[in-house]
Length: 385
Image (tube, rainbow, N blue to C red):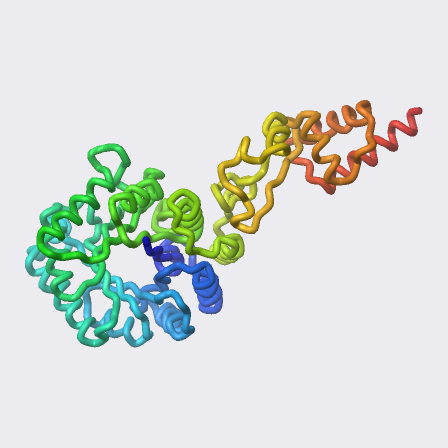
């Protein structure tokens, strides 16, 4: 059973210009808890006093979800996180030779010493604390460094090792396969009699975040990070709705309340200032809207002709848009929805011409406007006769 960690409140706030007020963070966390994510990563308390206060507020809410905090490999960061009352801490530190030498001026063993010291310190402070260690930019670091640091971290008390594709570097089906990477890492740790949970944090720079996360899942990853709207640094990370729906429908992981997703996305979109693209999978306005005449006709008979997901699982309804692409069959279906079932063929063709005219101006005709078009056509026919 895979866990889902939502990072809307931590990674999501690394989206340029995005900040959620404390009361909105609590509201977002409440919806995430209702949806049933396993871990809510509430923020990095060291960043600002306001984030510290928000993490503390969320941690004290008594959610079913585990509430977690982000932390550098520093005792002061751990102290602030524990002060908030969290049940999870994500500790990170790089292990790539290039970054260690050029940024931190450290050897690998010295970095591992700092990592393990902080993990031991955190575990001693709170023995039941769930600790994740992330080698930053895991997949582009020397693999032997990752294995060495991860092994030491687990020996020190880390429960989870997270594989971070920090730059969206991995590509399915190539030599940079996340499936292969996770498989190899699990084998190397198992050879050392170490069996931590394996997490993945996939960025979307090349558009493969969800694909890489699912590759990791198939390879046996235990935890997948995601965020509402896929918010995060640059192109963001795995989109939460797409992940949950795919795991539910295609992998039979039916544990989440998908009916709350639309409410969550509306809230996050409003307060992040990031609109939900109309053509966005699952949550976009057009995700369950049929437009072209052939599509609309077939979908009105059996939606599965042109759908692979039922909108009802999300508490949504399918819709039929009328515009320049519409045909007589889709118009007739829409006319039935507004109880216009007696209109003769000539009137219908006149209505269809008006609908197509509106569509050619870059708009769609909803049912309310369709009523007005029908009334106008009837009026003009009667007047001209």
